Image 1 (cartoon, rainbow, N blue to C red):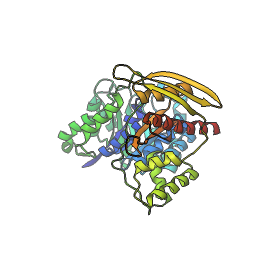
Image 2 (image 1 turned 45 degrees about the vertical axis):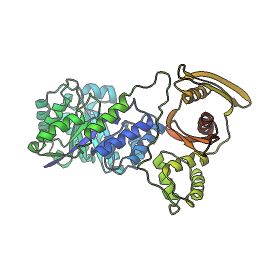
Image 3 (image 1 turned 60 degrees about the vertical axis):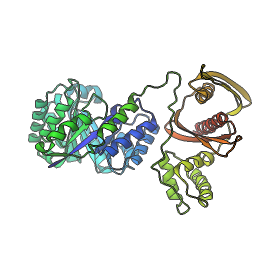
Length: 467
């Protein structure tokens, strides 16, 4: 019985509609489903994308985390630097094989492309034990050239070979025969993982993937919700009935598949508010462990990273000292650690200060906020309409600042009891991929929200000024 791997490409091709936090949550869902490989998009913005890859690498427990490398030795190094903290890292070298795409993408002739493949795969293999060579547009390549290039890639250290029907024009029986021909031509393929990637241009990607499995493929690219590729649920439905007959054993939790795919689809297709750019929500800490006085700074630092923060050593020590004061009395949950980080990490001078705010709301009109902030003794004023009072306040701040930041999390907590109770708001903003926490306290919960946002904002502004 052959082991069959699913390599999920949802976050490689379909993640543009997801926020930073949603991408991490989607990666966790895909990992829990039991797929063998979680594929991520190539690095475009080094700072933001590297931080995302590192965050996903930390979040994914079981699956291989695969990152495509740019077609240079420097690109391979950047991919490795981003993914090396994963429990099971993979570098993917994706090179077009058809003459047209070689000219368009690589600007090189076939012999030079072949030499490039050898150099890049060798570089990747020197860094990472798992290296995938992806023959893009393989079905339209010169067959002899394709086979020689694959042989070169295996000789250079590739542990997985993927053949792509990028145009999606092959019928299932043709793709199966194509894979058989390649296997017959390259005996070394038996020593590596043999994968296929099928386009759904003719609505036949699932059938083509099944044909490739029957022809000996042991890794197929699937997606949770992108119809451009074989849907993992569709492939699993076929294999549920025919896997034993085909001699394969899919490594996936079939009981989770429908719910997981629906969750990811919902995140990808959920309609955003027309009036507000914010992605509101409450972070789920339910499965998070607690810390206690016996946990040292290394354990606290690991918990900080788990929350998504990238703090300096100095800020980690500030947070640790504050943590110890609370841990002397009781266990500290990650939710409480989040509040400690917002209160003690990166304390900076207040660039923007709150002068006044007037927020109006009712059940018959939209919420409005009239806000005044000061910066360098200058007063800045804004009046906006939002989906609610908090939304209006945040939009008013961003109108003054002239910059939108992704709202990663928003929490409201009670600090004291009674009619004059103090309320605390916790804000997590993302700027250039990095997480900044802010905390505000007031008897007016809206005032606490405004102060929390400004607290996080001032950290962003300060760090940008230092860059």
